[in-house]
Length: 476
Ligand code: BES
Ligand code: ZN
Image (cartoon, rainbow, N blue to C red):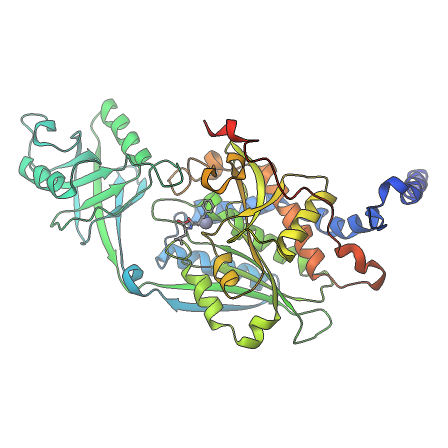
């Protein structure tokens, strides 16, 4: 202890000097050091490495988590247990998926060593095993001569599905894997898909990378697999909600939500989309638990986002008018840790580009932390939308590139594919940046207001507009 004393004295002197320095006050006279003291409560605790463990559990231990399927329910239980372990009171808000999304067809490809790939499928529930044969585009002439019937045809997407299946059967196939070649609407690699065709054999819609890997394996030797298609009906899903009442016990305190969806699309382990955002919700729940906060905080992991924001829509529908009145801010994290080299900014996006308490507090937090990567911008497509539509300030946090021009947004290539894994699609330091900025912003909004620090809520001067062509070079 004695040994430390000279260091402590030095620190105190340095701190006093810092506080006295006019350069360390913001334009409103608020000592920056005091703002940072609150931020420090978050920064000292929040850990991307720990959060990555949650992503690991979700994306590896559980794996793909399509809405309403057993893995999604496993993920809900995992998150609920975690919240409970922290001492929160936890609500599982169950809902039915209705309409055309109530049912879904999923395919499974199993290899001899137990490796399992998930794909989309045409309707039906069939199981077959056989050797995989590469059959090009699936035209009759694409099949090698002299095939023994009973094989599985691997066909690249392009020809009408009905033709592909009829030709495969004519040549003696007992199952068909059609692999995707059509890039996603956002320029991402092709995902798993559902071939719309009536069939009495399994017809799977595999992601591009699955087709590529199968072709590689076939080139190296004989490949035998088991194919299974399953039709899941009347899907049900859950929102998982942990609530931290206001420290002052006010049952009518304003509500701030920290949210992220935990489901994935079929075929994708959803490490970045959205193990990352789910892990942020989990990590901030652990860190904010012991801090004084004069707002009620709801930590919400939404189910069934990928099939139409179903969980968040149901959640907002269920709010009473009084609750809606109390909601002041929603921080929605979705894809906050990609390693894609062409993304440039962590953004706080609102569906119509309007800025409010969520974008402002994030921008100010970024500025306080000396990080100018946080930018407000325009984007929907995630669970902030139903809140926004209900008049509640809500923003999506995501890393984007492409000059942040909405028509030119650049996202990771592995979005919605089997390659959305920790190894192939995530970046620890971007994860930490997102946790720091969003964590500091949330705490700034929810923390107990100390009267003398009231002004800390002012906006820091940050450029609102960025040149639209500034980052376009990355688009090529
Ligand atoms: N995380 C994505 C949304 C996203 C992707 C935002 C790329 C910004 C850039 C989300 O999980 C998703 O894919 N949403 C669906 C929403 C739809 C089902 C309403 C989408 O955008 O296709
Ligand atoms: Zn998402």
